[in-house]
Image 1 (cartoon, helix red, strand yellow):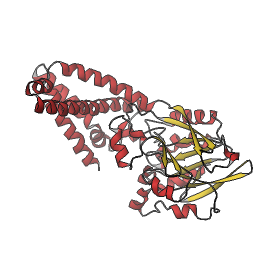
Image 2: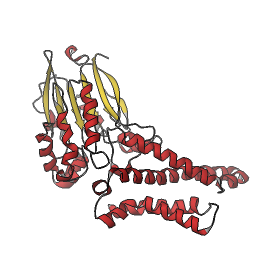
Image 3: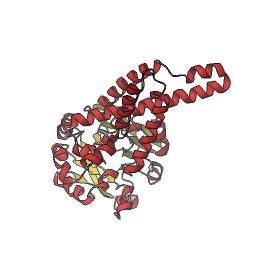
Image 4: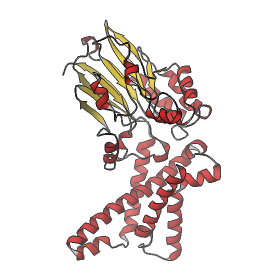
Length: 378
């Protein structure tokens, strides 16, 4: 997987060399230095793996990771912008050759483009690593017991605790979540990146989450990449209630709803139980309203057919960058960010509280601590 990613980023660098570095004004040495800097930024994961024998987010200090995220983000955004420019230029060229040559030409404007993209990447990295704001979402649910009208759930998702988003960042998220005084807190997967021994201190602040009806957790795909059982034991030791194809009953002012949690299909690669909705719902009294926690939103239509009232999901990070997020939406069967109506079910897909350190960039898709307020009726 590492070499596949390195090949992809290498192709991006070749494109930048052809369409950005080569047409630049200036001599051979400045262009060569720029090409080298872009290569190191594009292939920083491979360089760190070769030099330090580890993943950047596991072996490098946070400030260095933020700097590398900025450099890598600049490479990606610059390549994307130039690709859009070239595609539009080709279209114009087909219609009017003279205009096409003008659009495809290089020149000093590339310097300005490069500087603007670097500033944009810096803003995107800041949006990715800052402690997220609270986003309040009102969800009206036909069939919700009147006793649950106004019931408040805080959803955290895709925390991805690493050296980039360390214990201090997680503790700040916990404080903002507790300040909302929710009835229930749910975490819809991808709590960390790394082995339990390495990331134990970074996830430890989660033990301070407080809600009268508890803190429910489901695994995401990243939990399976490094000692799944070790992580499940760790989460339980922190006082988190882990749901692995299981459910709990939440009683509030004399009424009851069921909250079921699914595992992730990444389990199949490791010989572990994958998501099993019938098992998660088994034993729930007939007619009882049901909420489901699922890391990925792409199976929402199947979950809706099971008579579920509300599904909470994450995984997509909202697509992270507005525009390219359309690809994320397509991969996830049309669900990428926000509130959806799926048959009679409501689906909420969180943009994520954190994000994977390998692409620490957000533009137009901010991270969030989601405060969900339930309302009875349409």
